[in-house]
Image (cartoon, rainbow, N blue to C red):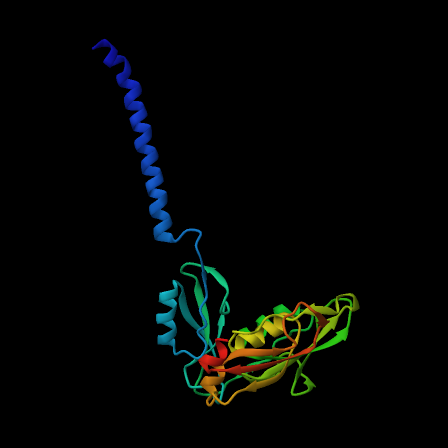
Amino acid sequence: MKKLKEYWIPFNLGLAVCLVLALVLGANALLRVVTQHGRELIVPDFTNMTYDEARVAAADAGVRVVVSDSVYVRQMRKGAVYNQTPKAGASVKHGRRILLTTNTRQPKKIAMPSLVGLSMYMAKAELTTKGLNLGRLIYQEDIATNNVLGQKYKGRAIEAGTMILSGSTIDLVVGLNPNEAQGYVPNLVGKKYTRAVETIHDNSFNVGKVKFDSSVKTYADTLNAVVYSQKPGADRTAYTIGREIAIELSVDPDKISR
C-alpha cells in the first residue's frame, strides 16, 4: 500500500502531462483542418464566366470572388469576367479573395494613369487595375531594362489624366540595358489566349501573329481557345527581348490534347 502511494503522485502527473499534450496536438490538428493552415491552392481561370459561374467555380476551388471593376468590350457577352487578380494559375492560401473585372453594358471613360518611371510589371498591374490593356512593348536603350520611359495610345504619346475608354490598349516605351538584352521564350502550349498574352509580356516579349483555327467561331471561343503551337518554341534558346512570339490556338479537344 505504501509503495502504491509512492508512485501515485508521479503516475498522475505523467497522466496529466499526456492528457495536456494530447489536447494540444488535437487542437492543432483541428485548427489545421478548419483553417487549411499552410495549404496552397491554384487559382482557376474565371475568364468569360458569369459572376454566378465564377462563384461556384471559386467555391469548388476553395477561394472567393468579388467584382471590383468593369470594362467595356464590345464583342464580349455582358457581365462576363474579363480579367482577374491574382491571375489564373497563381498559388494562394485557402479562402483568398479573387478580384474580378467584368464586362459592363455601357462603355465608360477613365483617366489615363501615369506610368512613366514605373517598372513594366508595375505599369502592367496599374493598367489592369484601370481596365486598360497592355499592347506592345517598344524597347529603347536605357540603363534600366523594363523601366517605363513613355506611354502611347494609338501610336501617339498620351498624357496622364487624358480621358479614354476603358478597355483601350496602351503601348509602353520601355528601357533595355544592352547587357540584359536577351531572354528565354516561355512555354505557352496549353494556356488560354489571355493567359498566353500575359505570359508573353511577363517575359518581356511581344505578341506576334495570332492564328485561331476553324474551331474558333465566337468571341467566347476566342477567350477559351488554347495555344497548341508557338514560334519560336520554348527550347531554351536565348532571344532578343521584345521579339514577337506567334501563337496558334484552338478549342478542338483533339488538337489541344496532343
